[in-house]
Amino acid sequence: MTTTADGLAEIKALAGRDLGHSSWLEITQDRVNTFADATGDHQWIHTDPGRAAEGPFGGTIAHGYLTLSLLIPLFNELLDIRGVRMSINYGLDKVRFPSPVKVGGKIRLAGRVAEVEDVSGDGVQMHLDFTVEIDGSPKPACVARAIYRHYA
Image (cartoon, one colour):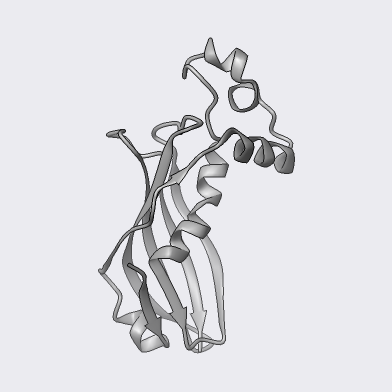
């Protein structure tokens, strides 16, 4: 279920709140190949199913940065910000990729608003703790803290 915050006061009230989980998203070879084309990263563990089958993961895996980029659509399922004139992605803190995502695997995002603080220019800065979970795996694919700024 998507949480909605309308305006800076409601965004501030989210501090400490668990946003729940997104839906599951299957990672397909087509998505991995498209990402490889976009970034120029055609390493065989991502794009060569035959060779990767004999490799350390038993098949192709998603790029770590592909997994990271999927925070955007998955996060949109968790939080809808309204009543602000502008929102920006301010950056990331401490990104880790504890476990690879095998092609054919499913991921989802768990999110929590760690803190919200005022910033100059009539805005707030949100620190969000994200965990990209892998269906059936005890270890996450990605753990990161994202920072967003919203301005009234």
